[in-house]
Picture (spheres, rainbow, N blue to C red):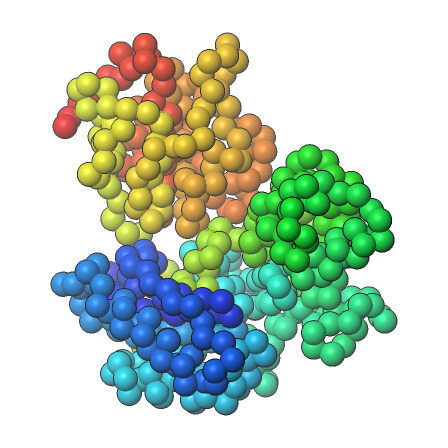
Amino acid sequence: MAGKGNLYLAVDVGGTNIQAAAVEASGLVIARKKRPSPRGVGPEPVIEAIEGVIRDLLAKGALAGAQKPAAIGIAIPGVVDPANGQVVVTPNMELSGVPIGPRLERTFKMPVVLGNDCNLGTLGEKWLGAARGADSVVGILVGTGIGGGFAQGSRLWRGARESAAEIGHIVMQIDGPMCGCGNRGCFEALASRTAIERDLREAVAAGRETVLTELVPDGLSVIRSNTLRQALELGDPLVTEVLGHAAEVLGYACLTVRHLIDPAVIVLGGGMLEACSGFIMPIVEKIVGEDCLPGARRGGDVLVSALGDDAVVLGAVALARTEIGDDPFKKGSTAAPTYPEIIVTKSGRFKAGEKSFGRDFYVTVGRRAKSQKVPLDETSDARPRITPEHLLRPCEGGPEVLFVGTGPSDRVELTEPARVYLRRRAIECEALPTPEAVKAYNRSTQRKAALIHVGEKGDKSNYSGPERG
Ligand SMILES: [Zn+2]
């Protein structure tokens, strides 16, 4: 594949941290750096922090010997004017009015392109995530606010005023709670993380009991996503009620998007949504599934972000590639990275790249090989079962396909929740006895990952076939 460049830089300018990554044209992240976002000190320190984190990346050993990056994509939490490389307004950062594109082009002597962070997150999911292959996608990112994006073909729909897809401010309850934007009853004022925390705190102040007061001993000012999931798993009535309401609002927002745009895929993302997807998604799917105004064909799936935090940087890379005339959405324009081959050694151990494993392990789409920390239970007589918890790490980064080695005697089974977990992220799964799974993994030319169950000690004598290493 003759691309115009093989290396790109992407910067995600967030309210807390400025994160930067060096990314190959394949979407493989080869180096990362971050710096805290300066606050309350005007724009110059913020620009210097962005320049600093780019310099940190360029100085990093991982880039030694690599070719010069072809372009830089910058994700801004606000409205931008890409034609002039100018930030128009950033409500939670001091970059409003700053012509940051031309400034960075002068500093680094390469093309710089700006985009809205949620727009770019959507573009990232369309390129390599849950919406890959879909012609049109709407992204909804639930965080402290709710952001969105709409991409069709190779392009983002940015709107006449560069402010399309501000989905968080669709009014969903007339005279509802006050929103940060000044209107009432916005989607974001009902279903963002901030709204959920507000509703939980108000209920506790009104005397409702919840397990959260034990799980979060220092008050409920910040409630982590995993704490909410824990409370749901414990069946806490208040958290179930509040999150259930937010999920309903989210479901009706998806229905609204569908009726307005009818995208091939809607992708939902954000830390809380991803952590609690097992609870939220069935509610959303039910509302969308019972739509009384169906389309002409099947489709219009609502999926969960497969790229997680990397969606934004990968979207920035997709935009940067487009900027220099190398459309990443053109068929055949993005080859998968090269992956470490998995080898079974004579002693029944496994090698993946430099690493050797005698127990269960996984290889991610980011080419990291690690031993599987969540054990597959082989002690009982029942067959070991893979649950969503086992899939979290192996599926990081959103592979197209996950190869699951089910042990030498094919004992491991995928539970239905695990299959649903993969389906909701558009991750294909090939579950095969371990020797065949290894061969299929090695043969595959897709963006791939593997989760390999090695098996019990006595089991290992069952490994046969081409032994190497
Ligand atoms: Zn609003």
